[in-house]
Length: 76
Image (cartoon, rainbow, N blue to C red; front, side, top):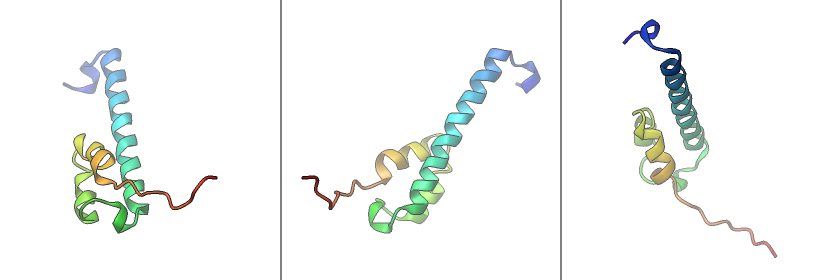
């Protein structure tokens, strides 16, 4: 279906989904770029490829690709 053939509602929904997909991919890419190797499960190179497999790649990385590092600071 072409853009011109879509209703305004369909166009709006598509734009919203594209925006969410772009936000997730950007968040995953920024996190992956600034995370040390020890903070990522598996190889970073494979995650770089994986985050561009839409729409599951960025979601998978954000849910399972990051390690939860314990904070070394204590709040007293």
